[in-house]
Amino acid sequence: MRRVALPPHVVEFSADDDLAAPALAALYPAAPESAAPPTFRYRLERGRDGDWTARAHRQPPFGPAALGDAWAFLEWRAIEDVLHEPGPDAVYVHAAGVRIGGRLVLLVGGPGSGKSTLTALLLRRGHPILGDDVLRFDAREGCFGAVPRSIKLDPLTLRELGLGGMADRGPEGGTFLAAGAAYTSPAVFLAGWEAGRGPAWGVVLLGGPPHTGPALLARRGEGGAAVRLLQGVLGNPRAGAASGPGRADARLRLLESLEGARAWEAGGADPARLADLIVEAVRT
Amino acid sequence: MGAAPVPAYPAARADVALRRVGSEWVVFDAAGERAHVLNPSAAAVWAHCDGAHDAAAIAAAIARGLPATEPAAIRGDVDAVLRRFAAEGLFR
Image 1 (spheres, rainbow over the protein chains, first blue to last red):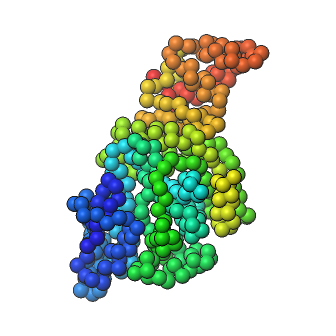
Image 2 (image 1 turned 60 degrees about the horizontal axis):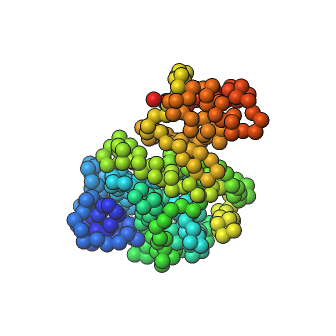
Image 3 (image 1 turned 135 degrees about the vertical axis):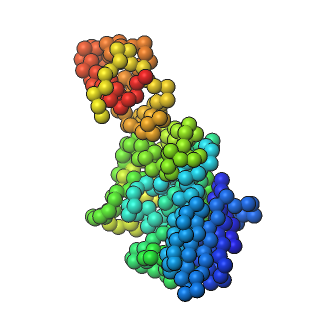
């Protein structure tokens, strides 16, 4: 059994079979362990035929399925449950966060825009991160914080980036392969992976696929970038603790936290060069 | 957006906030969970939507802050911005 803290929640993963131990360890590998009572429980059960059933909070059983698919289901459900109930005075936003030279930069874009790829590249170059896809914004402090989940990349992308070895490490090495995706602990890329909490210094808006042409990074209006970030607030606005005045106040506070932020738009088919451009822009 | 009427004395809803972000302005509609980028002129119009100014008074107030500008010269733009705010449901 493994319990990790994903504030304000404590998430418990368990299994009735030792074979599942690496899979459990791979769920939120970078999250701190917790001894507190769990708010959400997830469980892997092995069937007689060697297949698996995944049991998630408030969901019907998923399976029988291969271990990788059952694992991916739990990973998806766990983050969905956490972000739907962010706690008072907080919201989750769809963005990556990287600290470059002490300045926190948010990478904003839809699926396939390259958030995870850029995050992995910047992390490998020594820039700590808050996450590659989801960040938690604490409205009381006006700060973004980490959501310590795995970085999800397809194995082909890992190899194209010269990071193919990451996909071959296996669960015990910090990488779990499931349905064409490699879930890699950020600690695999950089031991001190977690950036400190803080307000955003800049926002980079990433274009969607297809990615073509040379890497591009250009300044753009900060207000439009702020609106894009607000549109990326996650969770169901009509359900649970993520609704009501608290959520609206948190979103307004998020907007206010961006008052002094800079903004860029980025694109192109060369993520390594784009990572260079981002670092140069932030350090200038 | 529909063709909502513009109140004679437009007043911003209490739960709609205007905030500066970098060099731009953003109006945030808490109830509608929406945000809009405003250019400086539109932000100036919004700042006068206090229920005490009609469109003519808003144009006059903004013109006073601009060099050699008569209210009549910007009245059309003010009306257009007010219509957009009304269509977005931002007035009381």
